[in-house]
Amino acid sequence: MNLPPKVTDRAFARLAEINDGAAARPLRVAVSGGGCSGFQYDIRLDDAEADDLVLEGGGQQVVVDPVSLPFLAGAVIDFADELIGARFVIENPNATSSCGCGTSFSV
Image (cartoon, rainbow, N blue to C red):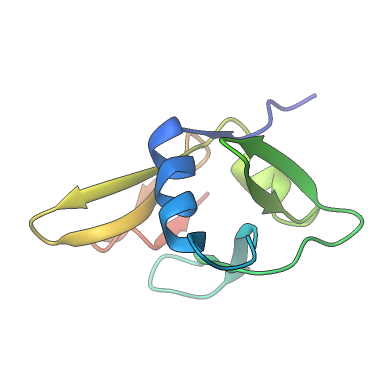
């Protein structure tokens, strides 16, 4: 069986900041076809579905749909705050290459 993705404490903390003062919504991390390398990440606030993998931490949830799960096996979902901008980032051991923006990859 493939290892599930992991979410860092920093990513859960940033999600808590985003959800502060509002009804907490899970962060969906999905993979879809497209982008400059063949696949791209879709990261957004969304409601959990019955068949989603739910990762919990710090009172927050990150959800992954069953179709995206094989592409994210063993991946680390983190949050980076850098000069080029602040964003959720994915360190994906399944990606053989990725584009410069980090949102597109190939397997």
